[in-house]
Length: 380
Image (cartoon, rainbow, N blue to C red):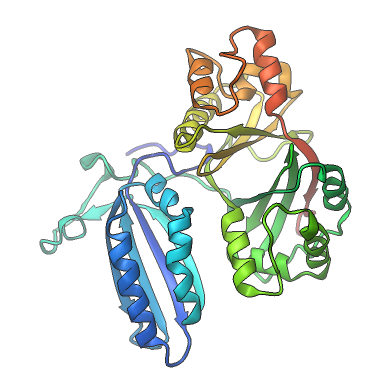
């Protein structure tokens, strides 16, 4: 039996197949409209690289409840599609017939013969060792969902935006009986804002809860004039489009698994990738962090890589100063990783950092400014 590591780990980069489950609640009388939209969407998505198949199902208990399952070659293929402008445009017609949706994403760990080729039932399930596109072993989680939002503000408005972001009142942490907002960390790098969230329970419920809080709504309205992308939060379609484009999903997280230590410093690094290189850059950083977490001398207790298109942000919780081991903090310790990173970065105008001083300077340019870091007190 494969041993399960004590580390906390989640990743989109194990190259296993992905199963996406979309739960939908339709408006009364919208079934025919929904089917027309689904047929168009199905034809479009069937030509997307990495898409294998999808199925549409209707509840036998409640005809307003529908289910779409889709299968993908890997998580990065799906994430590239779901974050694209083409996907955003293709799902817009759904909003006129769908009351509510919930999306769930799973790596495939076991698969029967019927599930793999549609040729009828198989007597037993295949193990991951039998197929190269299955998740190798179960990962150990910590009950926390990690997500981030990012957007840009007008150049010159950064001080005003930072002041607003640092001064707002925290929303109520308790969402419902099973969902809590655990931590919110806000960073800026130039005119880019990144808000990293840690949620115990249902991420979608937490995001909706936060958006409805009066103090958060007041903050969002206050920063509206400074945004590079216009939005109208009173218009559901405008708000949905803005927050869909702002989504910065966690594609990799790893932690030592010994529980959160007191005194850890939280840092974020911004990596602007060359066009088309975001996934490769995020994978490079994830690979190092997976290796480093088993090193007892490693000061990084936890690392989360967020990526959308060519925007990559790495969140670190570490012991001691960020520049104690600059190559490790930057994600380039060992081998020729600095050269690989430089080839993937859009802003690598100063060549490949090779010396300790050059790497330290590179790290300082990548570090984001921490605006606020707020935790929820432990529950009794």
